[in-house]
Length: 534
Image (tube, rainbow, N blue to C red; front, side, top):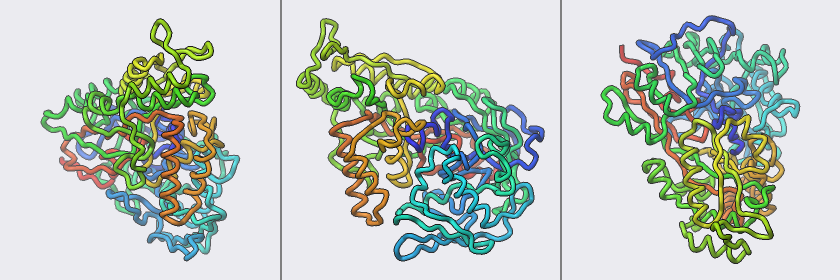
């Protein structure tokens, strides 16, 4: 749900998709040499839940890093610290915070053998900023006034205002102008047959089935030891677990209840990644019930978040009161909402929502009822939706849960509630702006609730445009406190991501993860550094 885009990771509508899928294909139509079963030797096959709509960074693919087909100017290490990638060092920043200068790595080539240079960086950013480009995340680069090449190995960004987290935006993958610049940016072959500088090259994309890659032998960072890498797209959690247990997969992302079943399996290791990934219920402003402030406030305290953490997540997560986790330095202390059913009933009573004979409330002839959609095959969302509906009914609000694909759900988002997800660990602007800015309502999966709050809009702009940390903290505190007064979403949990991987790859690591997971994150965030046991 947020323009970390729920389309992102959410149903592969990962159109802001983080990517960990891998590299460019100099011969897009080449044969798929990876087998469909579990990898062996120098191969690896992992199960993921979603696939991207496009593999073009110009349309949002890999924008948050970890794109194995591509590289950004910078990358994030295991501790989420910025490190050089296609740039030779972190940028030089002017005293006024308006100019960022990057020196580029020399001798880097795209997977088609053509050289990488400053012109490719300029082309990438200018194209994304072009209004004709269908990139739902364009507002994330709103601060950019211009991007210019100074010779072949220097790029200078000039900003409109001192945007504090700008360097973190430059993990965005760089594409080759000589290929992508000769095609329709929105529909050209590059969207499915990409070419990049990354450690892997795409060999085949079987839509709905798998993404297959081979190691880039000429990768500037050194050829990966895992020579073949396959991402099997398995949307159903139970099927993913079954295929892992049968030996078809080397690893998979699993919900906590299914990952738990592998805890005692010899030859398997379970990895828990801390995340900013939340589950939330959108409360559409255009729905007469869900858009009512009293209904929203009542649901906010009627829901038993800790019970969801304990029973649905098996303790692998935390209660969520907004997009910012409670252990983040950006969390506004005092905005926690305690489960209090009596308080919820009083809010509704005071607002004129009176119980009927069946226990369901009504006001002015409108029954306190609305549908709540969740993604088919996503057990975590289903369980959250059912628990939320159960808690709501105790307060006299009748919520009907419905399962559907994103094709079914998206046209209904303006009126119907959705069990959505989002979250980004990099900076509060990255998630909150696209989640809550009123001007982005109806823009794909941005602001899915059509939330409209002038105080929040002003605070989001202040947080984005200020270069002062104290001012930014105050702005995001304001956002979180306004969400207590009028919550356009009911935030439920922040979930840890669980992965089960065969131990033949040794001890692996995870990063602090965003909502988009499995494809771009997980223990395979640095698969190019793995050394498989023979």
